Length: 427
Image (tube, rainbow, N blue to C red):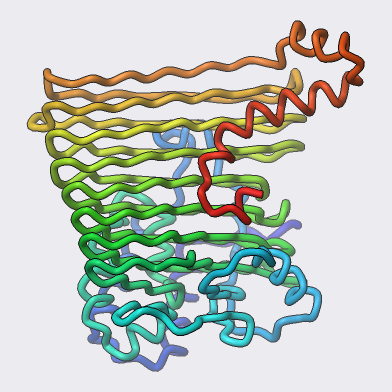
């Protein structure tokens, strides 16, 4: 779809003024001030270009040239409701929160009785009620000064999920956050904002699903605050429209002896950028980042990860895999920082890519920046196609060529899929 040329930053400024007026909020509130500062940052910097090191393999011009209108609450069509139901994984017994075009849809959600002290509500309602925990943590960890998309998301943030698990609590069922965007007319933007605060010694599993229809931009930010000895599994499934764009920012702030496992699976989207950061802020922390991206046609999927070993005696494990076909492009940039005082660090990082066509490409850049001397750190990347000898072996056992390739491709992917502990999602 073609769009008339506009000064995009000024266009978003004008939309922001309309957005703020529609909220009918107190313009002197801390939340308003946060939104305003973020907007000023976005207007000052604009969208990134390929001249910037962090974006040199990913051209966001299709996003920067399109005036995406911040979505308003809209009626949900029967077709959309049916698709959302499919996203909800029928076998998954869970707390379910559904957001349509960035707004909480209570009629499609399911929040059963929860253990004492556990809070699962929309972020908009938590802020409106003055929830002290939400107000204390919101916007404290994800920085927007050096990321235009995070700045834009912060400026237009309105709703999402607020989850608080108090100390020593276990939520036996996962919390499933379903985000669906749909438009049949002008391009829309949605800016979900999620805040998950997990108390000391608690345990929870969070699933995020993203999908939609039409031309739109999902620009999501999720902040995790993980207390001492807490355990978190986070699974993200991105299945956006092939006419849609997805920028996702996830931040884990981990305290002593906490354990986080994050599994990110990407299928959809015309252009996808994921920024995932784990800050190991106290001793004894363990963080595991796993990722699987499958792309074909002209899709581009870019995963940027950062693991910040800020303190001693922490461990991190990371493996990201890509399967690329057609003219698809993949980008992987994984950074591991080991700070000066972070002795006894144990960090491992691996990126593996399977190219199924001669025209698919991957730009991979695993990085280690180590400022301590008593550490164990490894990193590496491999790129290749299917092993012809393995294909021949299967064919010699009576398996057809295409089936043989499917078996080997599935085996390559299953290493990541099997790390997902939520069984219906894994299936």
